[in-house]
Image (tube, helix red, strand yellow):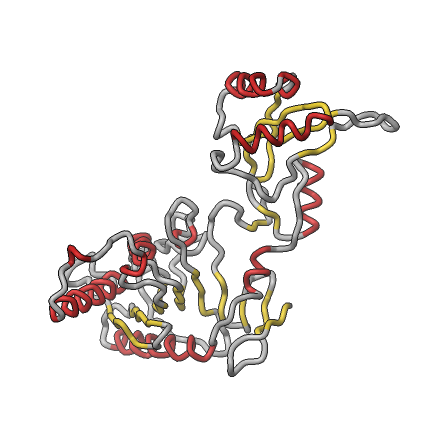
Amino acid sequence: MLNKKCGRNRSFHKIDEKNYVFDDCLQKIIGTENGLINDEVQLEEVWVAVIPSIKSSSILKFIKENITGNDPLDFPYLKRFQQLKIRQGETPTKLLTLVCSKDYIKNKDELVSMLVRYDADLASEINIFQVPKNYPSSKDLALQWSAKYWPVIWKGNPIIQELNQIKIDIEREKKYLQKISEISSSLENKGEIPIVTLFVNPNTNETMSLKTDNRWKNPLNHTIIECIEEIALKELQRRQSHGEKDTNIDSCNIKNYLCLNYHVYTTHEPCSMCAMALVHSRIGKLTYIKSAPVTGAIEKTSGLCIGIEKFNNLNWKFDSWKWCSTKDEFHTGNVDENLFI
C-alpha cells in the first residue's frame, strides 16, 4: 500500500498497488496504449546490430539522425546496448545494439545499406531479436525479461508513480454517483432503461447536462451522446444571443472544445461510439459504476478489448475510473448485457 496527501478534507489516499484502487473505492482503469504495464510479456521484432565496442558512439549518432522520432516504437524502457556473450574469462569486445523495430524498417538489405553508407563496421552482422513491447509491472519481472529477452530499465512502476500525484475528492465523486444511482433506480422501477449520465464542469462544479436513456426515440440516443448534444445546443444558443458567428470560431484552438476537461459520471461503462464521442469532446475524466463486459470500450477486457480512452493512436486521452467500493455500493439497475450503452 502507498499513502499520498490529498485534498482539503482528506489527509491521505490509500492505494492498492496491485489493483490500482484508491481508498478501497475508486479503481483507475489502465488502458492499452504502447508501454502498457502488464504481467504478460508482449514481444516485438527488432533489428540488432553486432558492432565493435569502440563503435558505440558512431551507432548512437546513426540512430539519433535516422531512427529517433521516426520509429513509432522507440522502446524507452529498454537498454540500447548489451554485451555479446562470450566465454568466461574473455574480455568482451562487441556489443549487441538495438537499432530499430522491424515494423519501421522491414527489409534487412535496406538497413544494411543505410548503415554501410554511415560506417561499414556497423553493418557486418544484423540479426532479428524479439524484445518486450510492454513494460513489466514489477522488478522481478523486469529481471526475468532482461535475462530472457533484452535488458529492461527498471525505474519503478510508472502507474504507481502517476497515482501518487493524483488528488481526487472522494466525497464529491460519491455525491455525483449517488445522484445518478438514485435516478437509475427510479427508472428501473418504472420499467425504463436505467442508464444515466451526468456532465460536470470541475472548475465550477456546475452540472452541464444530465440525461437518461431515450433510445426508444432513436437507437443512437445514448445518454452520453445526448449530453454532448445538449451542451452543444446551449452553446449555440449562447452565441446566437450574443450575435456571434460560428465562422469566427477557430476550430484549431483547443479551448473551443465544448466539453474540454469536463468530468463525466455514468451508471454503466460506455460503448465504443460513446467512448469515441468522449475522446472527440476532450473530456478530462470518466467515472462509472458498472462494467459492460460484452459491449464496453473502456476496460481492457471489455468488448473489443482496446481501451479507447487511452488508445495510443488517438489524439486525446482521458482518465477513467470505476467505483468498486463494497461499503458504499451504488445501484445501477440491470440492463441486457448485449445492449450498447
